Length: 106
Image 1 (cartoon, helix red, strand yellow):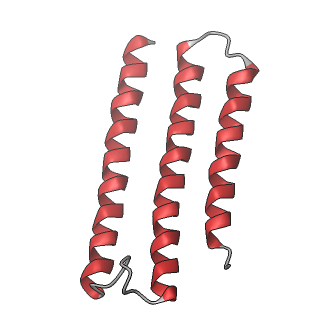
Image 2 (image 1 turned 90 degrees about the vertical axis):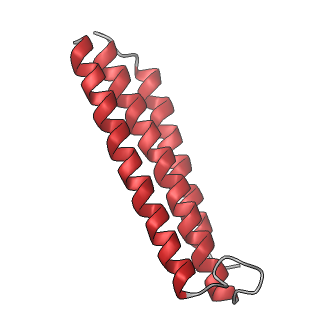
């Protein structure tokens, strides 16, 4: 079981690094297309797009961490308390609500 947990953690970390690298590449491409992207000179539409992208990445990272907590909790213990699943679900709902809140126009 210990070896399986190590393998899961290593693969989960590698997948996370790849996903964050792709997000940084996407951000860089948007900055190359428009140098004013995510600056004070940007139009309100571009500022909203940058905010949505940043919130999407942050909420994605939070959901990714929550899934990691669930996987580690499940693999580490013979009996996993339901409180852990409840806390993970609460974090997931918070991440989704933050992202949906960033999509709303003011």
